Each structure stands twice: as C-alpha cells, then as structure tokens.
Image (cartoon, rainbow, N blue to C red; front, side):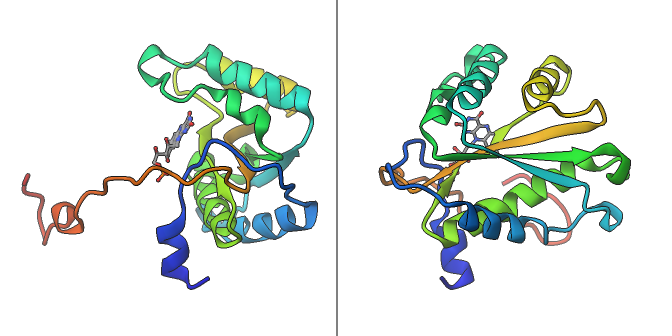
Length: 183
Ligand SMILES: Cc1cc2nc3c(=O)[nH]c(=O)nc-3n(C[C@H](O)[C@H](O)[C@H](O)COP(=O)(O)O)c2cc1C
C-alpha cells in the first residue's frame, strides 16, 4: 500500500477474524519495528510472540486488574481472541535512559506494518507509572529478567469488523506558527 494510505487506514479493531497470522508475517512486521529510531541507536528492544491461550488470558487478567474505572471502556478480554500478541520489551542496559520512548516508537512501526498487510493491531501499555506491579506481573509470566522492561502489548489479527468512523481533529486546529496560542 502507498504509505499515506497505510497511515490513514490504520485503526484499532478489537475483534479478529479466525484467520491466522503466520510466523513469517509476524517476523516481517518485527523486521519493520526494529527500524524505528532509538536513543543513541541502542536498539534496546526484544519482541515476544505469544500464541498460548493461557498466557493471553493471564495478560488480559493483569490489564483488567490494574485498569482504573474511568478507563474500563475496553476490557482486555479481547486479547484472548487475537491469533498472536507481540510484547515489545526493552533492555535497560541498551536503552540510554530512554527505553520507554524507544519501545513505543518501535510499536508505532509495528502497528503501521500490520496495517500495511491489512491486519489490525491494538496498542496496550505493559507498564503503569507509579504502579510497578503491572510490569512486575507481566515480567513474571514472560520470564523477563529484572532489567528488561515490558513496554507494550499488541494483539494482532485480521479485523473481524470495520472500525467505527473516528472523529479527527482538524489539522489546522493543532498547527501553530512559531508560538503556541490556544484556539
Ligand atoms: C498510550 C495508549 C494506551 C492505550 N491503551 C489501550 C488499552 O489499554 N486498551 C485498548 O483497548 N486500547 C488502548 N489503546 C488504543 C486506543 O484506544 C486507540 O488507539 C484510540 O481509541 C484511537 O483509535 P484508533 O487506534 O482506531 O485510531 C491505547 C492507545 C495508546 C496510544
């Protein structure tokens, strides 16, 4: 697909068709993710592919357990229906104190690469500032060492639905020339 068309087509769809996403396709998405910018070119990332139903269930349980009431619009149970989940993690020893930023950028690449193949991916955080238990619980089920931080959880699959149209801000409303001036 043409790049702008991919960017404009990307949406989060939380139900998936029964079609599988084979390993070689996941590999090609991750091959795009590793091309993201990273602090000092540290490339601190690891990507963990999850296909086990039990691991998907435990991830959903952790996400729901720590989800505050005002964010309960999207329960995490849909994670269990995704053919594959990719967890982006970062190794602090290669992250130059910017692990989260680098991991999030790699996730952005992953989401766009998925959209380019007609797949949907949904961004979920794998950590919560001020609540280290979220990352710790995820670390335990993925066997991550203490110096490797989980950053995002991205269920990926072919959409089983079309996304509701999204109201976008007008681009003119978010552009300023030289200085900020509330509109
Ligand atoms: C930082 C961040 C956290 C998010 N957390 C969740 C989440 O916990 N659960 C979920 O279902 N979607 C989550 N999303 C996805 C957003 O809900 C989604 O991107 C947004 O509603 C816009 O829809 P779109 O992706 O279809 O454009 C998150 C997205 C971002 C960027």
